[in-house]
Image (cartoon, rainbow, N blue to C red; front, side):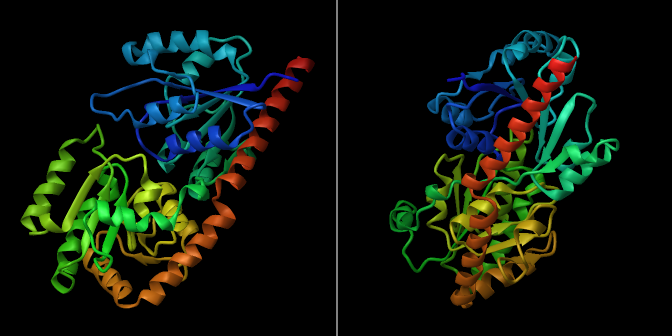
Amino acid sequence: MNPPKKILFVFNWLVVGGEETEVRLLVQHLDPTKFKIDVIACFRKPNMPEQTHTQLRALGVDVDTTPYTLSFEDTVDYLVQKIPNYGLIVACQAVPDVYPALEKIENPPPLIEHGGLVEEATLGPKHLTARYIGVCDSIRAAAASVMPDRPHHALEIPSMVDLSEFDSDARPKVRAELQLSEDTPLIGWVGRLDRKKRVEDVIKAAAIVQKKYPNARFLFVGGADAFMPEYVEELKTLSQDLNVVDKIIWLGDRPDVPRLMSGMDIFVWLSQGEGMPHVIAEAGASGLPVIATKDNGTAQQIMDHVSGIFVPHQNPAAVADCIEYLLQNPTVAKNLGNNLRKKVEAGYSAANVAKQWEAVFEEVMATYRSSKKTS
């Protein structure tokens, strides 16, 4: 039997996000006799979470953090030594260290770039990029625009979820842990506390909703973004100013997001400038009704008033109106959640999406082997 093909995922940094979840699910769903995935992270900032490192290592992934103590130039040299041991490189988050390393290597392995933001897709050269994979069509199109001689090498593969992780039976225990009765409305939000996610709009909506539903609670799952730690304090100050401190539950980073979602009644996502939010698919896997801004990938994930409700950007009053509408119309809320669940099952399940990744891996490596034979 042939040994598994070795693939190195190179991250700019490891935090808690969609691309980190993607590689974790690939490790869990690709055949380990066919593929061996390792990870290297090139940069670390104080207070970045350890959660992803721990999760990947628990799955047997070699997570190399050597570059955390190296300069950019030394990281490039380290990659020059490491990369030739692999049959394929996958670069995430527009990591700047990879291209300088590949250009120093004679006959480097093929490169796939993976992007979760539109602005990432157009960064850096593309002459060594065998394929660019974006999580939504707008990212794919951006990558294609800077690969004009081969736009078909820019592909779309959506973020995936493992449906087996989502269990509605966990709801009573989650609600008990949060000290909430079953009749307490719980509106949820999940993500890094990053300004482009517009968390302040959720808090402002909470202040409006509590006037009609004083028993409603708002659950925020996710820690501070290490690049903007002050944002957390701004949000907590805002909650004090709006007199909703006792309406909000802050949980920080958690590895059990699917379980926590079982305790929610409504999910809200109001970002501006995202790619395809992984959390929308997670909310769908949980059967939650979603209120969201129409922002790149969400337009593909949600059909307005069928599998979710769109609201304008930076409009907390409209968000509050939708929350109140769903609380008043539980049948509508249930139908929205059920329809989004069907969408997730059809298009975003890990069992299906991992096969798309496998097909690209096989094609790129086969093309590379063929080109080496003829060179």
